[in-house]
Length: 120
Image (cartoon, rainbow, N blue to C red; front, side, top):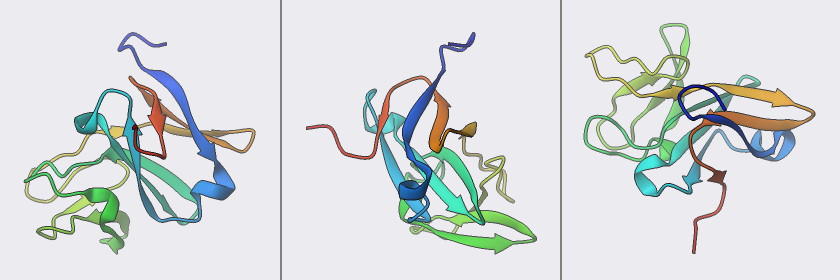
């Protein structure tokens, strides 16, 4: 655990997670803590699941090459967010989280447990 209370959380196998470009990760902390996991050009990215504009589900957005960088487009209003740093041209910002691959598993540095399935 680091000073922010975050730990590396295993979310699944690379070969399984790489099958989808965008997917939701459910947080043990509740819906507002959910993340969106993206896979593009062999790289995984993680950011807040809900758009900072009006809460659109970014995990259902499209990944686009925009100005030479990978972005996700919010399905509600079309805002583009850089997958690497969460930035946007009009000043909106998404929190992004470090992702690493170890022994064929994908890990995200985060404060709660994460799952591919919704809690019951």
